[in-house]
Image (cartoon, rainbow over all chains, first blue to last red; front, top):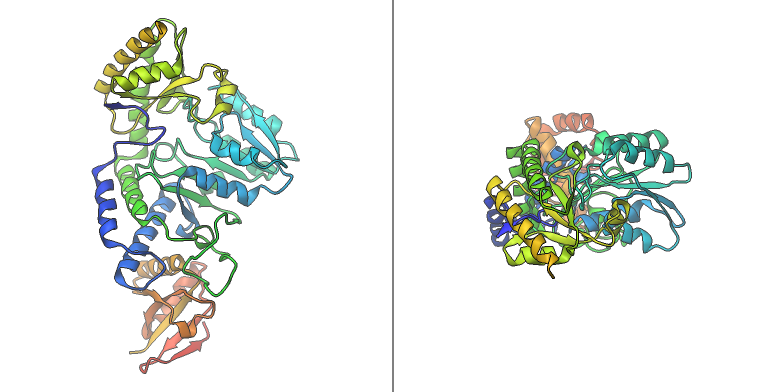
Length: 376
Length: 84
């Protein structure tokens, strides 16, 4: 199989990740509960994971790194913490359902969309500038679109939020591990990310970087302040009720070490090189439209083919051992903004483990799949 | 031996305290706070030797982590609260 769906989850992980998970399963107990060795070993793993994340993503101290189940969990926590009843929230035109569903699920909110044109960084920023009026309470923006790989001008959007005094939540699901993510530099209130995509950790892991007041969504034991019936007022305990995913954290730590060793920038350039070559090859097929943005595009892209259904192409590729994702990618808003809501797209995404040889083979398979899909 | 116990609000805070002390060449050990002195239920503390308290407090204050509660553990195992 040629795996080209790393925007959903990275399937190929560094070998150290499975070793770390297996080692943890055999040797750790619950952290923050007992003072015995296996419990303290678990606590040390959790702390090292927070420490590493704090270093990578510029969090002032490891206490402000909350371990979550995924990015969706982190985004729900961030939205729940910041968005008050009756509030107005400004979001980008490229948000995932992990952002839009928690917002639209609250019937009392006003949701405004800053919909800039695809791959138009200046236009995107200007859309935020126009829409960020006094009545906006919170801004939510993803760093990179999960459908098109559009790198939104997050530094400029963050600066705009700072200058207008608006708290910012960043969804770094598609950028953590490849692009600089900087909680402090951005002055963001929260940054949420999955552990299982660009950080190469196991599924069931994620991180929420916090710099402001938080409100828990889950209540329960934390191993601290146990006489009190309200949740602790300090992080990470406030947002981490119940036994945490220590084995996952062990794997995530190994994944982050891999990134640190290889270098985020090297991984990004590798993925972008593969992505550009693949876009060239796929775009050469007749009737295929590749959505490309050159400097404002990360290591993933989408395409549509005239007269061929995106899900049919995805299905045919799957049968030929090429794993891509087709459809709406849980981001109908992004498709609406780009004008692909009716067709959906086929998305191709890369990781540090893909090779140029895979790109050549997969591109040939894509051209064949498009041809076949047109006959169906 | 006589030890000091620096009471911490959470396990993570205790771990952070130990890391900061380690960087200053002071060894500390995270342990569960004895029930008899943990006022708000289960918690963790950092155990340091008697001789290192002054240096530890200096380092922690510099990092904005001045302890709120410190106990002295006597050789007989009894605890006595001391002013930080």
